[in-house]
Image (cartoon, rainbow, N blue to C red; front, side, top):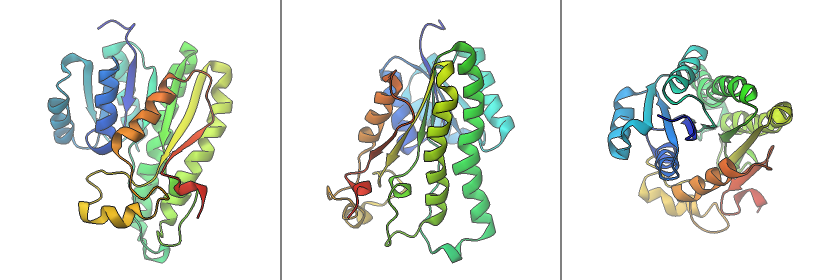
Length: 244
């Protein structure tokens, strides 16, 4: 495979936004490296995408440094370079803060924080050496504008921290030609949200509905092609973060 073709690494690529991103980047001509914890679900995604040699699935937990390292090693071995990293993997739970168990706290820290930091470390090293590249984090509009009817302190704390880390890393990597941005979606129409909840969830957004996956994907593709945008957190939330 020629290394003149751009390559993207997408975490959490087996379903939802991640699968939509994989399909869109393939359509845009990229090689795609998809990660996820379940090899079975990744294989099902690869079959659905039908991308042949242009899609590489690497199963593992990117909240662990050795797994993140393995993803990048395999990606570079197959495609020669990585141009874009999309830190998409994440989990969300809305419940009163006092009800979170220690196991739930550790799970969210592992996925929502470490699952961004370790892949970003690998990307930063590789991209800085090449003097080009883009890191894009998927965070949450709720971290920009908490809502009293959606108690989700862990998501707000961790995704809000990633929003600030996006800005800090953008400054750190700017001298190396690497941009760092984030997309902060509102509620998105994914398998996480049953159809019967859509009306109530949509009412949280000033535009009166939840987002469609392609609307989030379009924002990521914009940032993947934006050479003079860095340190930005772009809400895709129907006005949710504007206030109420």
